[in-house]
Image (cartoon, rainbow, N blue to C red):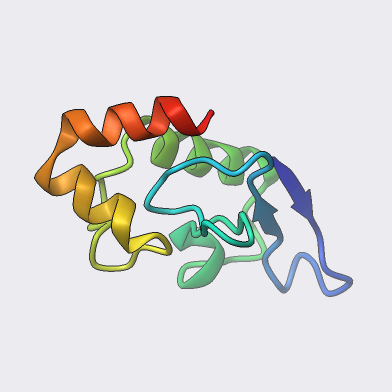
Amino acid sequence: FTISFPPTYPWESPRITCLPRVFHPNVDRDSGAVCLSILRLGWSPSFSLRVILLGLRLILDEPGEGGAADDALNQEAAIMLQRDPQGYSKAVRESI
């Protein structure tokens, strides 16, 4: 993962990119951009890098939490996670 901090940080959230890209509801297949709700909707300048990394760990450990299919960057991964968890796990392993 790469984390880039804009010049306006901490008033604006950092950007996280997944390199190499993985098959995951919260990772854009083309850009590798990571969707993490605390970075978009719930950002606060008081969040530390530790809070960001904990949020990242949560979505990696539990990709279906928080309505991933409703707000996914990778709809294919989100739908597969919901409908075919074993197929999803296989696709994740193949993407690594």
